[in-house]
Amino acid sequence: MTTSKTRPIVSLCFETDSDFTKNLDRLITLIDQSPEDAIIVAPEVCLSGFAYEHFEEAAAFTPIALDKLMEHIGNRLLIFTAITQKEGSFYNIAYALHQGAILHTQAKAKLFALGAEHEYFSAGEEDKIKPFLFEGITIGILICFELRFKYLWQQLEGCDIIAVPVQWGKLRAEHFATLTNALALMNQCYVVASDAANADTTALSGIITPFGGEIRNNGSESLTSHYEARTVESMRRYLNVGIA
Image (cartoon, rainbow, N blue to C red; front, side, top):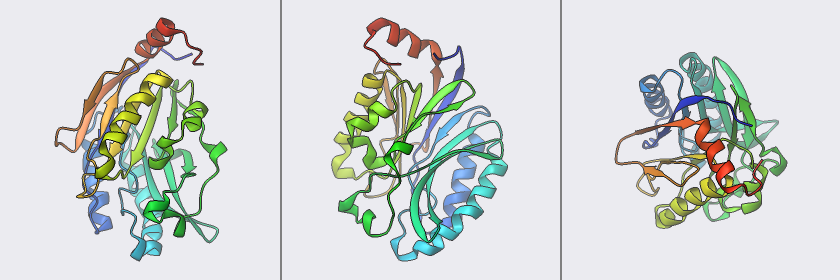
């Protein structure tokens, strides 16, 4: 059961540069411009891009970036992914940061073979794709290609918000919009989807309500709406289709 909370939600949409420090500075600026209690979702690997030619450098930059981000996040919640090295392997890990701490981590379990991700990353465990609780709000994360697997949607049933950080190919932009809209309707929750504004990505960051109300990026780097628990509760009472 959700609570009576209302909270700003922010979907970011900015270009990933080859300069890691420039990306971090841009992300921090956008965080600082967001409401002080916002839930913010940033694009997949927004600090580095996939950076296959500089993979170890990107992984080494992640702990430095985490320390700086945790200095700035304050009472906000930030969800994003970063290239991370663990025990000799590299993972695309989603982080949820709040008040100087890491609340949740989740390694990308479904790697995109057409993008050669499997040649560089180790896959996370699918059973780790599960909700976590943040101040009475149940949140789940699907990382990019994971959005295409309907059984993973079922693992996140009962979430109030599902964050979807991606680097989604522009040629499949309609798929991204359709799938994120359908996810909100099927799971009767808010979906906060964040894509990069690169030449080859959709730039279709968006926020979708449980009733299917949709707002998409209009060229700005930050899209803001509000999560309302009563909207989730109302939709689930209205349809009563067995969502937890």
